[in-house]
Length: 116
Length: 111
Image 1: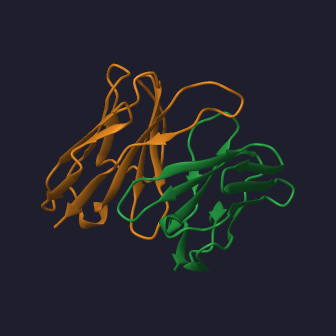
Image 2: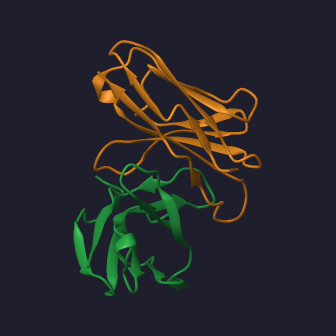
Protein backbone atom coordinates (compact mmCIF):
# COMPACT_ATOMS: atom_id res chain seq x y z
CA UNK A 1 0.00 0.00 0.00
CA UNK A 2 1.62 3.24 -1.12
CA UNK A 3 -1.04 5.64 0.18
CA UNK A 4 -0.82 8.09 3.05
CA UNK A 5 -0.14 6.22 6.28
CA UNK A 6 -1.06 7.43 9.75
CA UNK A 7 -0.17 6.06 13.15
CA UNK A 8 -1.69 5.37 15.59
CA UNK A 9 -5.15 4.92 14.18
CA UNK A 10 -6.80 5.28 17.55
CA UNK A 11 -5.60 6.94 20.74
CA UNK A 12 -7.36 7.33 24.06
CA UNK A 13 -5.63 9.63 26.49
CA UNK A 14 -6.35 11.34 29.74
CA UNK A 15 -6.84 15.06 29.84
CA UNK A 16 -3.56 16.84 30.36
CA UNK A 17 -1.41 14.19 28.67
CA UNK A 18 0.59 14.76 25.51
CA UNK A 19 -0.05 12.81 22.32
CA UNK A 20 1.85 12.54 19.07
CA UNK A 21 0.60 11.39 15.68
CA UNK A 22 2.78 10.37 12.78
CA UNK A 23 2.08 10.67 9.07
CA UNK A 24 3.96 9.11 6.18
CA UNK A 25 2.89 10.75 2.91
CA UNK A 26 2.89 9.22 -0.54
CA UNK A 27 6.58 8.92 -1.35
CA UNK A 28 6.82 11.34 -4.27
CA UNK A 29 4.64 14.01 -2.65
CA UNK A 30 6.38 17.07 -1.28
CA UNK A 31 3.29 18.74 0.18
CA UNK A 32 1.82 17.52 3.44
CA UNK A 33 -1.28 18.74 5.24
CA UNK A 34 -2.89 18.20 8.62
CA UNK A 35 -6.63 18.58 9.09
CA UNK A 36 -8.94 18.01 12.03
CA UNK A 37 -12.47 16.71 11.75
CA UNK A 38 -15.15 16.52 14.41
CA UNK A 39 -18.51 14.76 14.12
CA UNK A 40 -20.88 16.42 11.70
CA UNK A 41 -18.26 18.82 10.38
CA UNK A 42 -16.02 18.89 7.36
CA UNK A 43 -12.26 18.66 7.78
CA UNK A 44 -10.69 21.87 9.09
CA UNK A 45 -7.24 22.89 7.90
CA UNK A 46 -4.55 22.96 10.58
CA UNK A 47 -1.20 23.31 8.84
CA UNK A 48 0.71 22.67 5.63
CA UNK A 49 4.29 21.78 4.72
CA UNK A 50 6.14 22.02 1.49
CA UNK A 51 9.14 19.76 1.91
CA UNK A 52 10.41 20.53 5.42
CA UNK A 53 9.08 24.10 5.54
CA UNK A 54 5.87 24.77 7.44
CA UNK A 55 4.30 27.39 5.18
CA UNK A 56 0.92 27.97 6.75
CA UNK A 57 -0.74 27.47 10.12
CA UNK A 58 -4.39 27.91 10.93
CA UNK A 59 -5.54 30.08 13.80
CA UNK A 60 -7.11 26.84 15.03
CA UNK A 61 -3.62 25.61 15.83
CA UNK A 62 -3.14 26.81 19.38
CA UNK A 63 0.19 26.93 21.18
CA UNK A 64 -0.47 23.42 22.45
CA UNK A 65 -0.23 22.06 18.91
CA UNK A 66 3.03 21.65 17.06
CA UNK A 67 3.82 19.97 13.78
CA UNK A 68 7.13 19.07 12.26
CA UNK A 69 8.43 17.55 9.08
CA UNK A 70 12.16 17.42 9.79
CA UNK A 71 13.49 15.85 6.62
CA UNK A 72 10.67 16.63 4.27
CA UNK A 73 9.36 13.09 4.49
CA UNK A 74 7.22 11.97 7.43
CA UNK A 75 5.51 14.46 9.74
CA UNK A 76 4.46 14.49 13.37
CA UNK A 77 1.64 16.37 15.03
CA UNK A 78 1.97 16.78 18.79
CA UNK A 79 -0.75 17.97 21.10
CA UNK A 80 0.40 19.01 24.56
CA UNK A 81 -1.81 19.15 27.64
CA UNK A 82 -4.75 17.61 25.83
CA UNK A 83 -8.25 18.90 26.49
CA UNK A 84 -11.57 17.19 25.88
CA UNK A 85 -12.20 19.58 23.02
CA UNK A 86 -9.22 18.07 21.22
CA UNK A 87 -11.19 14.86 20.67
CA UNK A 88 -11.45 14.52 16.91
CA UNK A 89 -10.11 12.67 13.91
CA UNK A 90 -6.77 14.05 12.79
CA UNK A 91 -6.31 13.65 9.09
CA UNK A 92 -3.04 13.81 7.22
CA UNK A 93 -2.98 14.37 3.48
CA UNK A 94 -0.36 14.81 0.81
CA UNK A 95 -0.02 16.04 -2.74
CA UNK A 96 2.58 16.66 -5.37
CA UNK A 97 3.48 20.22 -6.29
CA UNK A 98 2.76 21.92 -9.52
CA UNK A 99 0.18 22.60 -12.15
CA UNK A 100 -2.03 25.61 -12.57
CA UNK A 101 -4.62 24.15 -10.26
CA UNK A 102 -2.31 22.24 -8.00
CA UNK A 103 -2.47 18.52 -7.64
CA UNK A 104 -4.91 16.13 -6.05
CA UNK A 105 -4.79 15.94 -2.28
CA UNK A 106 -4.98 12.40 -0.93
CA UNK A 107 -6.00 11.66 2.62
CA UNK A 108 -4.76 9.02 5.00
CA UNK A 109 -7.10 6.89 7.10
CA UNK A 110 -6.99 9.33 9.99
CA UNK A 111 -6.02 9.12 13.64
CA UNK A 112 -8.88 9.16 16.11
CA UNK A 113 -8.18 10.92 19.38
CA UNK A 114 -10.41 10.56 22.42
CA UNK A 115 -9.55 12.65 25.46
CA UNK A 116 -11.18 11.41 28.67
CA UNK B 1 -19.27 33.41 7.65
CA UNK B 2 -18.76 29.98 6.15
CA UNK B 3 -16.75 29.91 2.97
CA UNK B 4 -18.23 26.70 1.61
CA UNK B 5 -21.86 25.88 2.25
CA UNK B 6 -23.71 22.61 1.83
CA UNK B 7 -27.09 21.37 2.96
CA UNK B 8 -26.35 18.85 5.69
CA UNK B 9 -29.26 16.61 4.70
CA UNK B 10 -29.95 13.82 4.96
CA UNK B 11 -30.88 13.60 1.31
CA UNK B 12 -32.85 10.43 0.67
CA UNK B 13 -33.26 9.02 -2.82
CA UNK B 14 -34.57 5.66 -4.01
CA UNK B 15 -32.22 3.17 -5.57
CA UNK B 16 -31.75 3.89 -9.27
CA UNK B 17 -32.66 7.58 -9.00
CA UNK B 18 -30.46 10.60 -9.60
CA UNK B 19 -29.00 12.23 -6.49
CA UNK B 20 -28.21 15.93 -6.75
CA UNK B 21 -25.81 17.48 -4.26
CA UNK B 22 -25.17 21.20 -4.16
CA UNK B 23 -22.48 23.50 -2.84
CA UNK B 24 -21.92 27.26 -2.86
CA UNK B 25 -18.71 29.09 -2.06
CA UNK B 26 -17.96 32.66 -1.15
CA UNK B 27 -14.40 33.25 -2.33
CA UNK B 28 -14.35 34.38 -5.96
CA UNK B 29 -10.64 33.54 -6.33
CA UNK B 30 -11.39 29.85 -5.84
CA UNK B 31 -10.30 27.96 -8.91
CA UNK B 32 -10.32 24.28 -8.05
CA UNK B 33 -13.33 22.36 -6.84
CA UNK B 34 -13.55 18.87 -5.47
CA UNK B 35 -16.08 16.36 -4.29
CA UNK B 36 -15.00 13.84 -1.67
CA UNK B 37 -17.03 10.90 -0.41
CA UNK B 38 -16.74 9.93 3.23
CA UNK B 39 -18.19 6.78 4.71
CA UNK B 40 -18.96 6.81 8.41
CA UNK B 41 -15.78 6.49 10.43
CA UNK B 42 -13.55 6.64 7.36
CA UNK B 43 -11.44 9.31 5.73
CA UNK B 44 -12.47 11.38 2.69
CA UNK B 45 -12.00 9.80 -0.73
CA UNK B 46 -11.77 11.93 -3.87
CA UNK B 47 -14.67 11.41 -6.29
CA UNK B 48 -14.39 14.27 -8.75
CA UNK B 49 -12.41 17.42 -9.44
CA UNK B 50 -13.49 20.26 -11.72
CA UNK B 51 -11.73 23.45 -12.73
CA UNK B 52 -13.70 24.93 -15.66
CA UNK B 53 -17.27 26.06 -16.03
CA UNK B 54 -19.62 23.40 -17.31
CA UNK B 55 -20.00 19.69 -16.76
CA UNK B 56 -17.46 16.96 -16.17
CA UNK B 57 -18.57 13.36 -16.30
CA UNK B 58 -16.91 10.28 -14.84
CA UNK B 59 -18.95 7.12 -14.90
CA UNK B 60 -22.12 7.65 -12.88
CA UNK B 61 -20.85 10.95 -11.50
CA UNK B 62 -21.18 14.40 -13.09
CA UNK B 63 -19.75 17.54 -11.55
CA UNK B 64 -21.14 20.89 -12.62
CA UNK B 65 -19.45 24.24 -12.06
CA UNK B 66 -20.81 27.76 -12.47
CA UNK B 67 -18.20 30.27 -11.34
CA UNK B 68 -20.42 33.28 -12.01
CA UNK B 69 -22.97 31.93 -9.55
CA UNK B 70 -20.24 30.46 -7.29
CA UNK B 71 -21.99 27.14 -7.40
CA UNK B 72 -20.80 23.58 -7.84
CA UNK B 73 -22.89 20.44 -7.85
CA UNK B 74 -22.52 16.68 -8.05
CA UNK B 75 -25.01 14.41 -9.77
CA UNK B 76 -25.00 10.70 -9.09
CA UNK B 77 -26.94 8.68 -11.66
CA UNK B 78 -28.42 5.25 -10.97
CA UNK B 79 -27.85 5.69 -7.24
CA UNK B 80 -26.87 2.55 -5.36
CA UNK B 81 -27.09 1.75 -1.64
CA UNK B 82 -23.28 1.74 -1.64
CA UNK B 83 -23.43 5.45 -2.52
CA UNK B 84 -24.88 6.15 0.92
CA UNK B 85 -22.25 8.37 2.53
CA UNK B 86 -21.44 11.98 3.33
CA UNK B 87 -20.33 14.02 0.33
CA UNK B 88 -17.92 16.82 1.04
CA UNK B 89 -17.47 19.80 -1.25
CA UNK B 90 -14.03 21.42 -1.15
CA UNK B 91 -12.53 24.46 -2.86
CA UNK B 92 -8.96 25.63 -3.37
CA UNK B 93 -7.54 28.97 -4.43
CA UNK B 94 -5.42 28.85 -7.57
CA UNK B 95 -2.67 26.25 -7.66
CA UNK B 96 -2.11 26.62 -4.00
CA UNK B 97 -2.34 24.88 -0.89
CA UNK B 98 -5.15 24.06 1.41
CA UNK B 99 -8.64 22.84 0.70
CA UNK B 100 -11.58 24.50 2.41
CA UNK B 101 -14.40 22.06 3.07
CA UNK B 102 -18.10 22.36 3.56
CA UNK B 103 -19.80 20.47 6.35
CA UNK B 104 -20.94 17.75 3.95
CA UNK B 105 -24.29 16.40 2.76
CA UNK B 106 -25.41 13.02 4.01
CA UNK B 107 -26.87 10.92 1.20
CA UNK B 108 -29.07 7.91 1.87
CA UNK B 109 -29.98 5.62 -1.01
CA UNK B 110 -32.98 3.55 -0.08
CA UNK B 111 -33.89 0.13 -1.45
